[in-house]
Image (cartoon, rainbow, N blue to C red):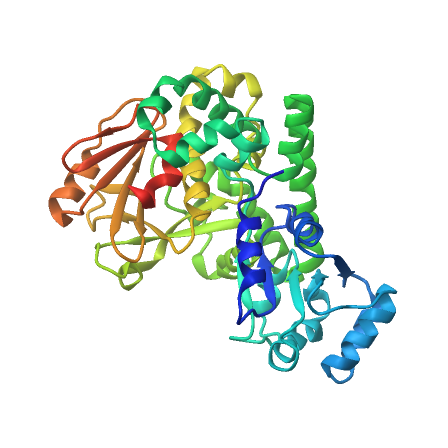
Length: 432
């Protein structure tokens, strides 16, 4: 299965000032597979160490963190010689042994010749809990579920994925039926590697749903197993409220939808926990449009999206017929899935900061505002071909951005200030 992240790993290998690399991402997005596949493709040998329930590794890292001693210990454990240039060292579930995380600092300072990649499904939490962390001594890579482009490649449509990158809009429009079909499938299957793999092999939507249910059940188990006891019920309630939050016309997160009388203070830690796990994307509101957008962030108002569009459909109990045949019952939730999809694709683009905009009266709302570092791009999301974009016009008149983007099922079209970008092209937004 092709992952764009592989190209980033190959670049990391070539860097002269290479630091140990930490891959962050939610559970089951394919971190372990990616690290092993990278070892297989780019190195003669791979030494894979899983730190989960590994008492021998806990002992090895418990005493001093002398890198020569650690390498000797790892060689004895793996039963092979570790050659700095030709061996990839993989530390998986590294958060289970916090001292192993701390050791990365010493590997960077005293033994930078070793190639080390690490991952862990709850790494984000370990990092925020003040584990003695090697700040500035490691590189980071975020891994998300497969993007729509990766999904096209996984399902044998590599030529169609290349076409998107070439931005051959005329040809793309000619074959829009193929993209629309693939997009419907992606809304249902999502980008979790196991679900995509199953879909590619069997085209069985029921099997895909079963896999998604299993993944969601594993997430729920993580809540009980790893979160502090007192916040587990809050995490659960908040997590289960997300589909109904996104089904609203205005998708701003409302605590009262979790339970009547709920207050922000009670749920802040739960949101932080889900966010650190990579299970939710928190998109904050801005009330103006200068660079950097972060300066205009309103921390009290935000939207919460899930890690994956397929999991959202599964949580909402959407049936494949409803989704694939375009049922009327589905109209209410179509906006939620479409915004979720757009958020998910934008998240895979590097160095992009994502917010949403409403004015103080609440009479104008723009679904996403994207800060590329050089320009601010407002993005209006439409689930259908209905192209009325009143809010975008109001925003345009007030802030005069270079371009505004309306993304929908309509064909590509560029007007004076407005680019109509088909949903399947949304990942091209920074290249417009």
